[in-house]
Image (cartoon, rainbow, N blue to C red; front, side, top):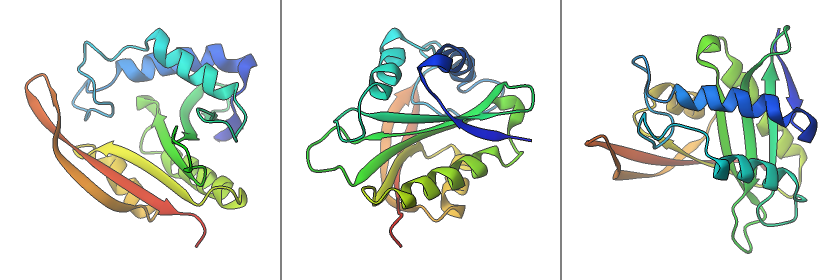
Length: 180
């Protein structure tokens, strides 16, 4: 059984450990890249750690805020995460950016689906949020299919957005209106 819990400063260290392992799996063992980083770049930098911590310390009406939830199994291990954050631009308070991931040992168990259902309902209940936006590497077919299944619509596809290890990667932008 999986439960979803809001991340706070008290359990940030466990999340950082999970995220470090998760990121190290980017593009490993025949899985698609889920971050636009080479295998050598797929480490959790101090800058990334600070973005999570700093964003979690801000109020939801401040530019740069972030809220994070984790999927936890019966052994209290983090097996997935989802976060929303501000767009970091003036006059975009009605939109959030989505980030998420699932531990490679727990994929194909509908954890990503459960996390997305949770965040969509959270955003629908928050009347300040109208849109959930995301970007995904186009070659990440499982993620793209999940977002489409959850009614995200494709806004754009940027051809050759990244060149990682001499391979071209396209980038897809998607959105979901949570007011409807």
